Length: 356
Image (cartoon, rainbow, N blue to C red; front, side, top):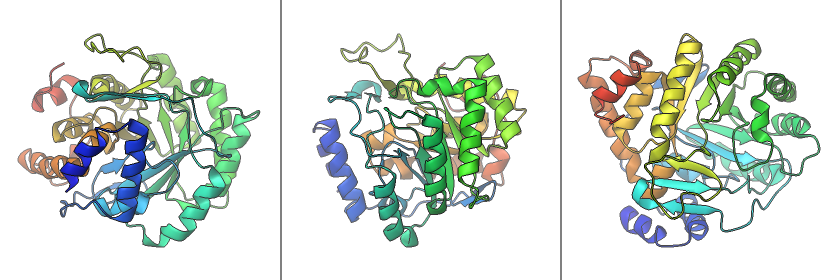
């Protein structure tokens, strides 16, 4: 049933397919087999296994309960903005199917903070995993930093962690918040906003396109402001020269398999710069268990997927987790945490037979 449905969705317009997928997941139409438990702890949060659903799929808290039932240990909803917004002009999602990639320029289309809160109030009692909310400013906001403050204040009571999104390429000026001073202002605004929910962790999602000196600044600020984890990374505006596709020059963020090496190199840089002292979450191009394991060996305690879930459906969870468990046992690790960050980039790629 799952494979037939996923194949059907991939024949449709991407946005229509997404609406069908949201309905199917929220209604419980799609099922999954029992998945192996590979427990991992990050800060004060406990995860049944490291595989989560990245922000961008459930933008407005419509299907997170169903996603947990499919087996995701973590679902990150959003990006949620203060006011509802339609996003950028359609078409804005483009499939590069033969490369396992997508280009999107959606622009934070979502139903807005209040609609999300109303849905969360109804569904939170039934959630069976760790729920994150990814937040960002409205495109036309006159005071984006205040947006972060209000979003943090209103939403922190309905989730297990908040993610500050400064890295989407589809909201003009958003990536400017990688700037040291601006980033401090954003984080201070969010921390002040969640003052009534102080134990809620705050994660930061960064761009794969930042330079090494910018990454150094980001990590310095993460230590200074006690950010709980870095999510590495969002989509890229760069284009792999190996991609030869009529859509490759569409404006927007590239996700999927072509992003794997770029995001993984940034992940290793973050591990080295932070001396392994900051929690890392690996995202970008994870299509197989080998990709997932490589991210973990490079320093990620958790991993998230998006594009591979679009193309492969619920079956990708079983494929990744079953084999990931086998790899951990094969290599003599007693727990997932023992495998985190033990190899460098070349070693992690070699052990997983990934070409670089």
